[in-house]
Image 1 (cartoon, rainbow, N blue to C red):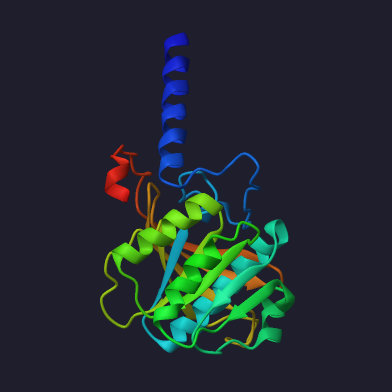
Image 2: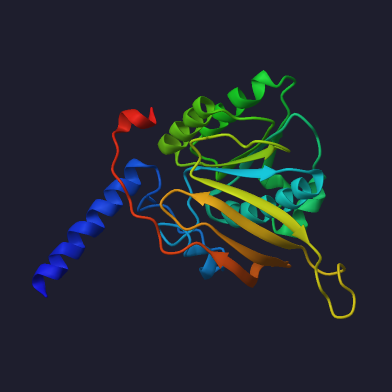
Length: 250
């Protein structure tokens, strides 16, 4: 029994050290982001939504893009309550600020930045991610290569700011250094005999997550919190953690 306890303690310590090296370990002073969705939280290595890292959201069409914007806004409502304001970087003015109230996010907690040129978008995003006083940075990016995503991930590992990248991609998604990749699809809500007239409902697909378990869930937004409607599938047990040189992540 003693040997088993020692073995478990060593493995837990190694797991924490590896997650910290990969930018996934939550710092002691950081509050745990509670989304009120234990089934979704179990997909992540620390049993909670990963903060202080980069998430990417893939939208193949405008309907998915609108649903993704709503889901991201609901996430931000949880984040800003714990850590402060956020920055939203976009070339286009698609959001109607007062509508953010519907997802629990006061518009005065968001700083909107609209660069004039595409080449300024990632630079602005990277500089914003270095600001330690922010809860999160959201960026609507048309494309993202591996090198650019590594720069952003390195920035958040220093600042502990969460990055949410929304990519409009009808085709190939490519490879990035982001910790998690999501795809949000809109679904018809249900309120009695009036389908489609209720609160927002999403099919939330966690396509990949580092050292976690991808899965699919049906999630409703109920005024000020998430509610799990259905868990469609989740891919097996959590993946094992492998050690690799830091040079491979540079």
